[in-house]
Amino acid sequence: MSELLKLGAPNERPRAPKPGEVELNFTEQGVAELEALVSHYPNKKACILPALWLAQREYGGYLNGPAIAEVAFRLGRAYAEVEGVATFYTLYNTAHQPGRHKLELCTCLSCMVNGAFDLRDYIREKLGVGHGETTADGEFTFEEVECLNACNRAVVMQVGDEYYGPLDKPGIDALLEKLRTSPENTVIKYANAVVRVQLRKDEAPTA
Image (cartoon, rainbow, N blue to C red; front, side, top):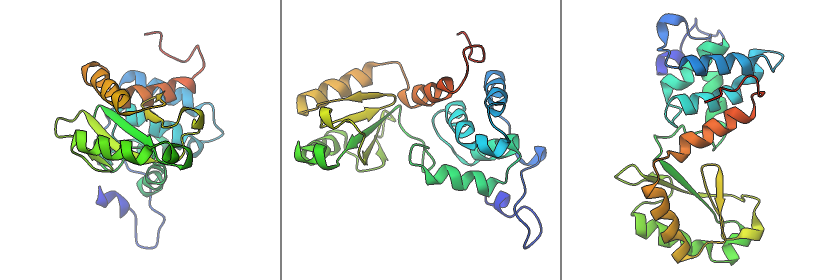
């Protein structure tokens, strides 16, 4: 998508992509939800964050170049502007396609003193991945994160829109087995939950 960063003449502010420069993949439901979200704000620029959550759902949990380009096109913003927002926040998956389940282990103070680093090493060894890496089968992406604001449940881990804790090694084993056998993609489920909470009851799909 580097060509989208260069759109416009030299020394001009990058412009929004044009129809022929992007592939539009939002579903009809996604387009309707975006229109509803835009109506909540004074202008389309103010809707970049919720639009990115919607795109993360529509693109299978991953904000790749085409996903960012579609948001830029639909909001009439420059690709570089939308990319800058998406890559600033860690809850948007812009580095690579995550697994079906993103394991976000808190290693801040309360969790640290309750054994977070031991659990971190245990998860890494069990899954064979490091920070930010995804298992070969595409099931799990593991990340260390900052405080999840659930210190009463240390050690705590976020998976999608759920918190799990306090955790120990048997708890990790049970959780991984539960997730592995679940048909859900918790990354997509989380993005959908964030979208739905921003829609009024009459705007959200009934299904």
